Amino acid sequence: MKGRVLASLLFATLLAACGGAGSGSSGDTAQDALNRGLAAHAAGKLDDAVTAYFQTLEKDPKNKFAFYNLGEIAQRQNRAQAAESYYRLALEQDPKMVSALFNLAIVRTNAGATADAVALYRQVIAVDANYAAAHFNLGLLLRQLGQTAEAQTELATAQRLDPKLVAPSPSATPVRQASPTPTR
Image (cartoon, rainbow, N blue to C red; front, side):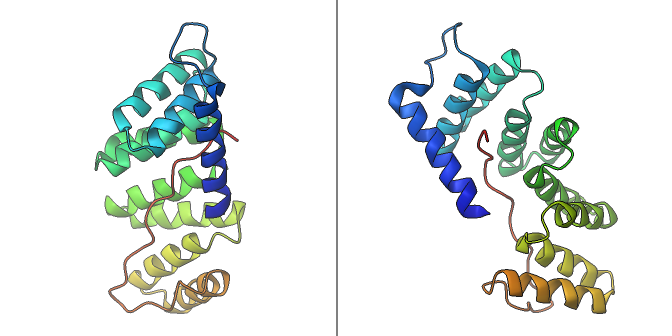
């Protein structure tokens, strides 16, 4: 999954570098603005990315990728309320957007809303049963809640799907947020 995301992000970045994205003129499409945002995001130019994502939303007010990527930036900047709002807007457009569900679960976990986070990880798994990091984080939360049998099942599934996710010690930390989501 991570490889697909990175490959798509690289493609969007190359498209922008080759002139596939405009420079911000009024003739730009939402896709042009989104491509500029993705290129800036990948280059770590977060202010430029935010500007481009808002330009995307001016042209396409329901663009789930712009909402998601604004959430990812807000989350990275420790602005949890903004991140949650953007992820929820992305999910209004696509309730099965796995990356938004996953990152929203992390935000809710950090806010102490464990039950919400558990439900969100279960939604991720319902959409993508092979999302190892969701199984891993769900297992950690279930263990924290004292549901050890189900926690062990989730952690074993995570390790089967991704051998790098070994059975953690009681102090293990969850897998971090998902990366910026490309356009398609």
